[in-house]
Every structure is written in C-alpha cells, then in structure tokens.
Amino acid sequence: MLSLIVVLILVVGVNTALWGTVGLGRVVAQAFRKRPRSARHRLAQTTAGRAGTAPAGRVTPNDVAVLIAAHNEELVIRNTIRSAARLVPVGNIFIASDASKDTTAAIAEESGANVVELLPNRGKAGALVAAITHFPACRTLRDRDASGCRHPARG
Image 1 (cartoon, rainbow, N blue to C red):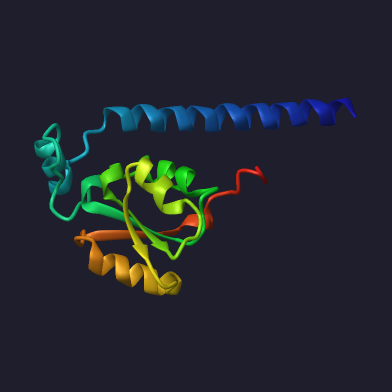
Image 2: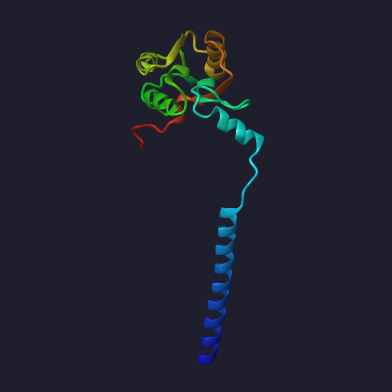
C-alpha cells in the first residue's frame, strides 16, 4: 500500500512539474514574440484619439439610434432609456409612444429622449414604422421593446 502511495505522488508530482514548466515556457515565449500588426490595427491606431472618428466599417455610438416602441410603459420607460443611454447618446434614443394613456411620453421627454406620440394604436410594428418615417434615419437601429426591462415591483 505504501509503495502505491509513493508511486502516485511521484507520478502526479512529476506530471504537474513537467506541464507547469511547459506552460510557463509558452507564456514567456509569447511575451517576447513580436506579432505583425494587421492593417486594421494600424488604422485603429491612426484614428485613436480623434473624437467621433472610427476606422472604416466601424460603427460608433454616435452612428447608432435606439428605437423603442412603448405602449403604457410609464413604470419602466425611465429605466429603459437609462439603460440605452449607457450605450448611445440620449439624443439618439427615439420613443414611439403608441397611443399610451399614461405618462409614458412625458417621462420619455423628461429623460431626454426624442418622442413621437401616435394615435390610434398601431401595434409594435406600426409604431416602429411610423417612428422611422418621423425621425431622421441613422445608419444602425437597435430595436428594443420598452417592457423588455425587469418590472421594478417584481425586482
């Protein structure tokens, strides 16, 4: 029994030391290896620091509009706008208040979002189409339903 334990310790110990050394060698070798920089990386470096610029094909937060269809969402619209404002400027957030009977539109305007109030109710697709035609188009739209946030009362 004692010989089995000694063999087990030697095998596990030697194996761990061997592969630990191999791993350490790979990390050291990678640290000293020079990688050729891609053209895309060089382009990103040349435009870094210039406000509002991005490499060709890249989308910046200023290029993105968040379009939210909302119907009677006064309980969650403020948090939805706050969440979207972490990603894009609040001026790029557009709310289509689809015949809301509560204060959804007023809360959205107070939060700094652009709001269009629609009558009669058009449904989500109709509200999004109306908002796209009403507001100036941006290159990229991120569609988000206002009730997609967790309800404050439910946590």
